[in-house]
Image (cartoon, rainbow, N blue to C red; front, side, top):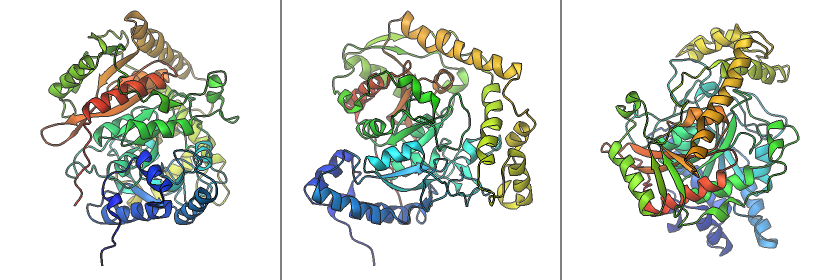
Length: 489
């Protein structure tokens, strides 16, 4: 017998829709959680088998009931009160769920404390609904591994096409879960394109914030220099609500200290329909031939974006110059930092855990190779040979060069030379230079190709320019209304 839900639940819901309905006592948070659990059971674990969810929080319904009672006797804490949120599987939670980064070795890893950002979410009244699949070890496992694959979760599938359609990574499960309407929003993490790429591929909004705006404490790390968490949602509005809650200064994360003397932003105040009017935007068109001829690009759709920006009153500088964009970026920073940071994380795990060093993780995978080594582990093996201390000349020079060429001869150079508020890139091709700089970007849907594949664009800016980027992305979103839900069967 098919479970029947109220008509209210038949469409994709926004945070504003839900809060209004709960305030009017038309629905409860408990009913909302039950609806999303039903969606997950029907389409993720059965039906098209999208494999975006690794596990569900067994206490989610109890938490929802408590928040419903709190709303009755007092009032909602804010926009996220009673709202279900999914977390990427490299974000720690102190509950019955595990944090494994998709690995078999860490499938029984129970954290001793919530990640700082999880504390922020819980304090705001959000319900942690579950953990999402991801590219194993945030794509730090094997060079041949498909995006969205993990030993623990299998292959995440793009809901907009057949099973071979690129899903993007490494926050694949978080973006697919949002796109397929398994949750209101989700949290991903990014080192380079790990939020922006899957957001574009799955026609959702993804914000990769300035490194340090959101605490990195409680995240299974990839790098020290570039890692950041960020919100994923179906609308810019919902992403902005989530970013307001996620941002904060954490005594255990020095990267957050640089925002201590900056005024705390209410990002929802920048949801301005006319936000593009009078803004100066650089249009990046100098993409590589390889990208321009790839299946990810649609020149007509990108030209439509440019037309929309101009029509909404933006002042455009086309063919904007970013001198260092096409340089051959060194990967020495992430190469060395993954070994160092992952060793540190594993070393602090409880004694009963099977691995405490990268070399032990490699040995574990070899012991259970039929399950763990579908794509090998060449990336891990290469990093295991590196020295323990971060002091090599290759690493230090790469770290300095990354900042210099991405900031002073990169994003900041272009913004200052052309007096721009932001730069718009087709798809996520600006992800690397923004990641190296530690600067923010926001991905937003921009249509669909002839085969139904999603297309999107990325607005990028200098450090702590999230407010401006949200304003631009919201105005573009409201002018176009491109996003369409996938058809799930």
